[in-house]
Length: 299
Ligand code: BGC
Image 1 (cartoon, rainbow, N blue to C red):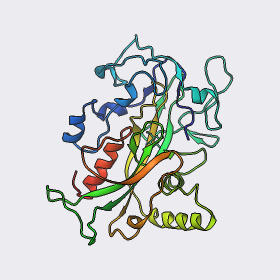
Image 2 (spheres, rainbow, N blue to C red):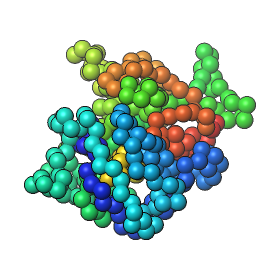
Image 3 (cartoon, rainbow, N blue to C red):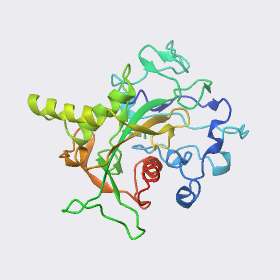
Image 4 (tube, protein in one colour):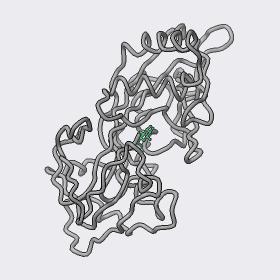
């Protein structure tokens, strides 16, 4: 769920302490050849027009991306998606100038967590931050005889559970938005169950069995990333952060045996070989790269 992916103001948002200065430019080469574990800053999030609309974004050239750069003429378009305007339950209230609604940023606001994983933000009037969580479920690629398959570079090939998103048709980690009042670990489990194991469609007994397996697997995860995501739905005033966690089945005897059924926001699901040439949604490729590096797999 998304708590209002909207752009409500023309003022510029400022983060304290220039936390984005570590990020890379929009160049695939730099992502794969420079230091690992970095996330591209506002590449997909600067694509114009806005996702699912004809409204053009205010163009921001590469050198003007860091918030530390002074830019008096910066004047982004005010944009709210049609879907959010239709006021689904999870959308934030309207906080535009004439509205009495107020949101509490940098803190827990009712049940909604508006604290960044990256530090406190200093803002004028805007609707920032939407928290997501991404479960990266992995196993080694194996032959019918259960032997690990090696790449020509001599390294073992890792596979992860990828879903095909219904909205963009792109392959992605089966993540989702953290619901108000929910924990990250609950979101990780729920989204994997719904999108990769279709627990929504399952009936009583079957559902219980799926939940039990997922709970067992998800007891031991390694966090690989926490922070900003370059999501195409981000706007100049509202964006996504995620926590990506790796759940690795080293022997292939647990998750490796799961039957995968696409459900909810997923049109398809399968075990996907991991490598640098994958084209994934948002900045998911950089989280996957971290997992491959951590497990010393082929990249
Ligand atoms: C997706 C997550 C993703 C987040 C930010 C959510 O809609 O389900 O996988 O990390 O958006 O891009």
